[in-house]
Image 1 (tube, rainbow, N blue to C red):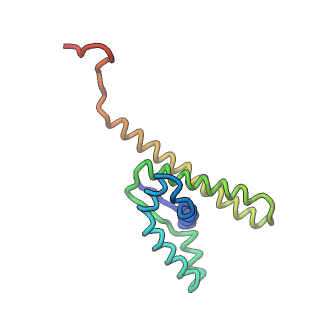
Image 2: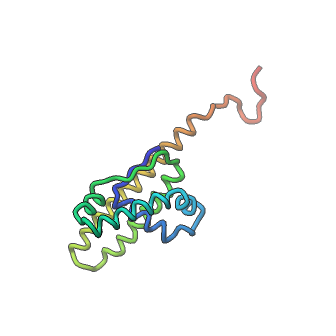
Image 3: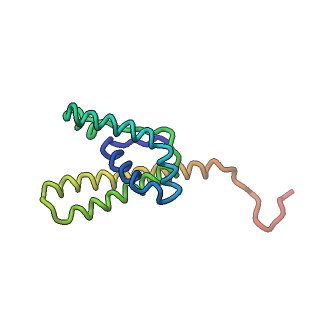
Length: 146
């Protein structure tokens, strides 16, 4: 399956992964698979931020990061990370000025949508795998018909 992030979503998810990569095996595996790509994107964004903020903003908001192929376990792990960040943004929205709350609400909604999309892709991939298994006509505890 193919998964697509807006660049800002990828940044949010990868920052969270970088902070929590040693928490479990799924995060360690995802970090091992994506760390080099993350570093490349991060370096380019940092360069743009310093040299041309307009291009930086465009890269963050109007460009995508795509991984293909990705298995269902990876899509689920990314969805969990996106939900964690969305939860942090929910907590950060408490208090603060209205403009900041509006920005956080946009990001929170975008990450929640991302998580739902990736969870749906993972479910669909798992269902396809299950339907590819050969069906058995044998009943448990009974001999095969002759």
